[in-house]
Length: 302
Image 1 (cartoon, rainbow, N blue to C red):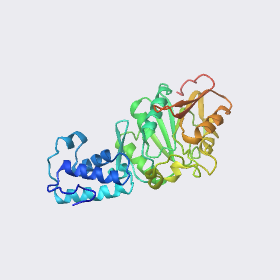
Image 2: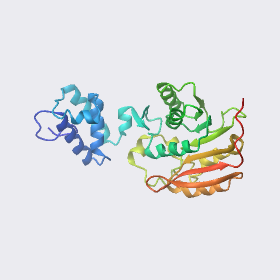
Image 3: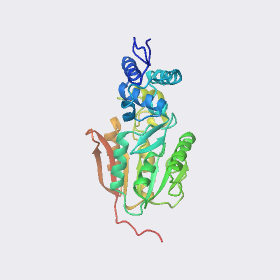
């Protein structure tokens, strides 16, 4: 039998034979990381972690398990993201619900959270603009029990996922979710010590390096800027930044690709900010915009 579940000539369908067959089939389909994809999918089918799979190499699969695995591998062979097939994804060790309405959290965004935490003062008021699945807001709130977070999202479907993730991690009292575009629904007079965002920064007319599964399956609204204007979302964030960011507060935002240089130039031209920088990620790519609003941090309101 040949196909996405096993290699030709297998008599008994064991964990090992199904893993090998799925990996080989996915590799022929040009899928990224075929071995890891096969392991994650079979782990989902059997309810086993990666190590448990390797300790169960000789375990046979029954017909229902094989059929479920075959269906998942076939979808992965069409480049549907593994995270969508699993229904959740790990971000800084936190399991988060994901789906077609939100971006799948990535390692670079974990680095964004680390950078944001380094610029997060005690008892900080934090806002996450364009929260998507809620990954950034949840990770910051989990790491820092002393902060309060506002998370803003314009997509109703994404906001529903973010709400489920906030509740899943017991953060309903410390993360306030708002439906709106950027600052539009943030209450007047609200001021923050940290503004963090992973906004769209890919020009739809120049999607350099965008993987096929991202292009086909992840939400365009979370990926693409206004045509020909990769700084459009940063400009929307900056429109109220001087009024919303407390003196001494920080902006920390993700960027990339052709947006990096113009985004930095935009940030350098904002009045009232210093310590402006474009910092690299672990792959040495220009990735993170940071800037501090001039002035000393004001005392917290009593």
